[in-house]
Image (cartoon, rainbow, N blue to C red; front, side, top):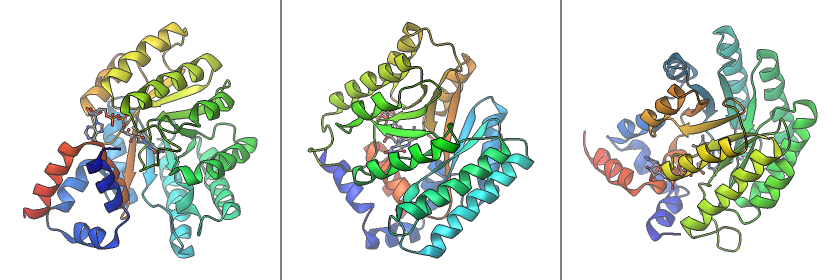
Length: 307
Ligand code: FDA
């Protein structure tokens, strides 16, 4: 992994840097580019704009690993409120939710994670939408896939996420690539050791294409999460090659990244879903976006010192 990317990802876990960034005068301005706001109302406002031009959305209430039961409970309550609002505003057809298991539980307790995921899935089913379970660092992959498999026994539409940078992912995809299985394919956003992850960007891209082929061949509902123009071109060819009609797979991009490309794909009849994060705990999410693109880091550092 490039040294700058490793450095930024290390800063994502550093409390002192977290405090400096969170209180710096210009940080809000750059946060607003990637995060919809802090409240449910902020998130719904952004989602209205996105759906107005034919794109879809998946809403993520920001939060990661916690040891605080109150915080985990608050996260679950926020999702339940959000789902009520989606139903009330008749947005459930075009807006789903994404969750991180580590934010729904306490110290990684798998039983509590599954119970809370179940509460969110039940509410999503009532309101007529779906849930996708984000993938976190490689130490959590097995537990996350276990929770998805368990939830799918009741709610077969629960979305799994796989990361093409992990060496194991091709074999995970082989078991997830069946008809009706909703699978988001992304490159992966965490600092991972070479024993478990490809470190060369080209190897990550090749793995992405192999996994995409497997999902398309197996009949899964593939959710291609990438902003990479080369990969999007390859995917457009592969979906045709496998005889997939538009709507039997989708493209996903993050809020604030390549919005023109999102609209262009949607205008061509592709299903495009925007991942919209919101909430007060934006720091880890923001650092991962900065690590992906050093040009954003320069923008961020300038914003930090300006008033
Ligand atoms: P890559 O990073 O190689 O970028 C390719 C091109 O895209 C760049 O050259 C640039 O043009 C543009 N671009 C990319 N990032 C940009 C940025 N921050 N600002 C501006 N332009 C940018 N990861 C994970 O580990 N678990 C998960 O659950 C998810 N979930 C998820 C959902 C969705 C909808 C998306 C789009 C992504 C994720 N990710 C994720 C993140 C993912 O793993 C990956 O880190 C990012 O998508 C960046 O990788 P790209 O495929 O975009 O390519």
